[in-house]
Length: 276
Image (cartoon, rainbow, N blue to C red; front, top):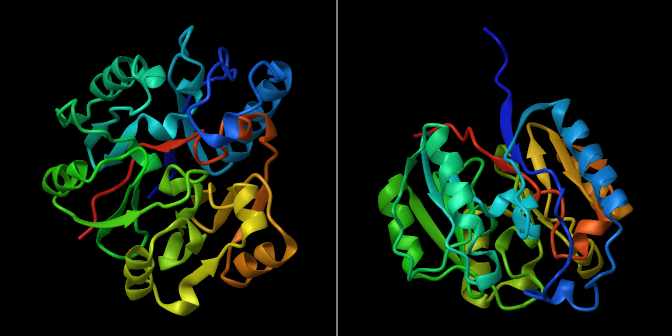
């Protein structure tokens, strides 16, 4: 039997730039992009991931610089998908293109009420061991989306609230890893959310990320089996991940950090198998 390989959706950075400010990381970076460097970094990430996963792409569109961040296309579980309805008006024109991609690729698509804010796999992450979806609220995804996700995917939703605007999606500060490990930055969440996390993930499985590593988007990582791809990590964090059995790949995506995204934001796993 052939070994299962993840399939990851990416979008080439043909039109990537910082043209507006919709998160704190973008402030001061308008017009500061090095487009050639961004292209080199994106291709390096694609090539690194392609050693372990199959990469598919969606066509980039003019005037939509943030389409490159495919994690926000939607969230996938089995052959079902929920496309995003963006809170920032600047990103709403992306929605039709992502919905078309899901439909063209055979996904059953939830018709989420457009009054409800939801930003895909930026704010909805499968736990890699427990039977639940970690789902954020506080900045870009609204609590009304949580019940819709629970019903559509028939899976428990654990709601966790973000309280620091620098971490506007949970995938900027929270990364479920293989075998039930979790890499996360606790100060990004409120008290009740931290209790919810600690009650579900035992202490020996929790990898706490400090302020410096969180600021380098270490939690915004792509995990494929025992491989972890991230922008940058300190020696202690790399040692902790290695102790847990992971191989760490640092892939410089500094140009994309200017827009508030890193390796995970640039990818979407589109073959999440249904588990019981």
